[in-house]
Length: 326
Image (cartoon, rainbow, N blue to C red; front, side, top):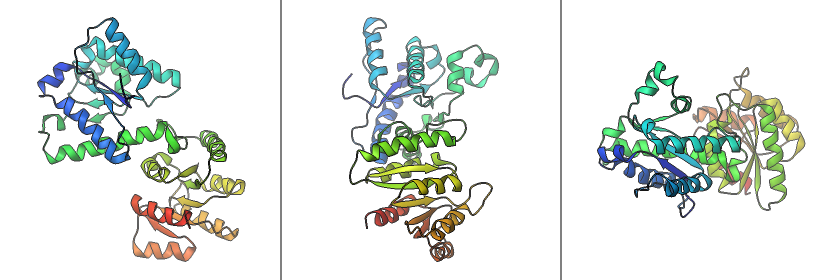
């Protein structure tokens, strides 16, 4: 295996042949889509196109795939669960996840309806199908029957590429140390605290980087935005509440603060934190990233002491870069 691919495509050739090479085409489109979304031209998805005999060569190939690929992308069909190779690939990646203490390295694409996933009496007898069923899957079943030049295909590929980019952001790189792994529930304060310590240690070893406090009770909603900012030498400390944000502000200086608006039970928590920050004499640039950029809301935010408010990621990036690079 060459070029250290980011992901390994697990699929059956019969499915690919029946759909006229659509799985191979999807793999290539996904590569391009993730490259476009992330700006990383090196992103690749390994696909075993050559026929490799089940045995020593196959086992060596699989070992290399597990050790060098960050993600498994299983193309889920009825035949997938009947394929010894696909099942072994899935098992190996599940073990790989367990070794890394993660649960977010397998990204299933639901390509053809599989009865084992839809019928509880079948699902309970297949541990691997149950594992796939327990994970968030990207439903490609409608797109599987569309020609590649259909406009819906590009739109769907872009959305799927965004999800893969988010998975990349969770698992490595400047932002990835600050982004919590995907879980059934939101991350705990202890987990965020550990990440804060990790970021602080990294920051001490770096020069010229900026540090932003991002306050949001659902930090995984903003993975892509943080990934974009990380490309401009910005690190993050995450806070889940107003109280935690104030505690972090007492510990260290930040180059900017980004806050959502509503955090239970305070529907205007973004302003509550802003008022506390300004009352303490702290003039750190403050931005609200919420559901509105209505001119009236922008004026109110500025009147209260914020530098801006928006619901658009690109605008937030521009405002933040302008502030931290003054």
